[in-house]
Length: 484
Image 1 (tube, rainbow, N blue to C red):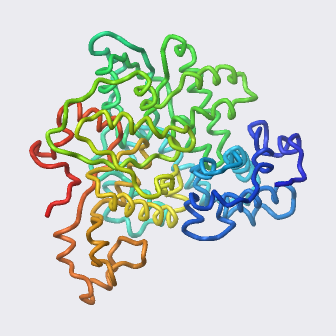
Image 2: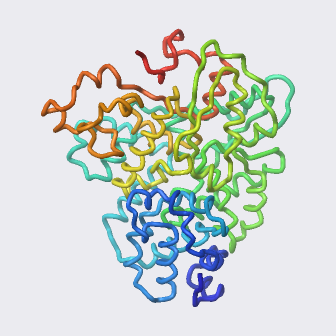
Image 3: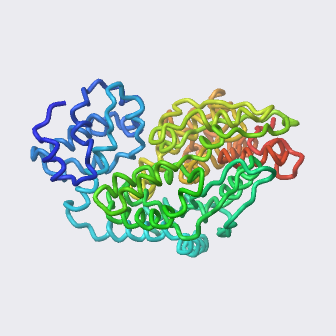
């Protein structure tokens, strides 16, 4: 696509982190391959809500052809999932334009105190495990009053785990079982320490079983991805500098810096771009060179094979976007799972399409996040698998929300939903259909299913322990398996 701005002019407008923005505009030839994988275009069928449409809008703003406010509704609606990059035959690096443009938009958009206060509240809460723990407990107590809260807060509360949250104190050093094969730093992040801390424990157990010494640093914090993805890049830079300063002195003594949250892994990979003009640039590059997702690391290292399952279990793998698209990690989780004898690994329909989590997207774009989560849940249920496996805490929370009490695929196939579904893609029962008698409520009690959502490391840990094929009572089939 032709444009009027030179790379130097784009750098002046977007800053030094925008290297590659001009190339992203130039390479887009409007072929349309991105449309099939864009979540918002698939829901809205609006060219302005597609990757190529947004590129045109951002280019037009930068060249002064339209006002920023004309483009913002569509650019704000982008999840930043980068599925378009994976499907683009021209190699357009959409994120190289989107990130700097959002940073520019945050500086120049019209002030909105309500939006700004809500965003700062969410960021300051999510970035601090201690603050997140206490506010989550407060929110749990406030559930009976959720109806009187603003929609954005109601949507956030829906994502909270039902169980009373407890922060797990991770061990600073975990020795390997048997001969040491590697030494790693495990980046603890922020949100997962509160909402899915068992993923960290499972990761440490799997690594130590594989002969890996694991150190969890105590002086790191949020990776900054949550802030950067909504254009708050200055905030992300502060967090990045803290982590680089904490990790860089030790990096050379370890074989890898591992992440088990897709968002953290992609966030760390952005450090060289965020810190390009700072004194931390060289250290950021050194850190990123050692950073790796835990599934990729274990695939390269090799893992001992777990014992064969006593009962067959099937899992459906839903890739986190920032693992599949941002980091290019697709085969590694599947290869690890396929090492478990008796485990069937299934693929969902539309595996490349985002579930609608995307950092703060649930808070700032709750309607679209809900539509995408609902759509993803139906695809996963239709796979017929016993449980869902993914690699990101935000995806786990989003999928748990939409899979809770979901229909099994047999209800869709048997036509139970006719007249009871609000539309072809909505798996939720309409209240008016129940009240009018058009839908038999007893079907819900006989056929509702709970489909667990697990991290790859949790599945491996349970396989090593010999409990993957057992339910909560250690004698039942897996909790997701449908009963007749």
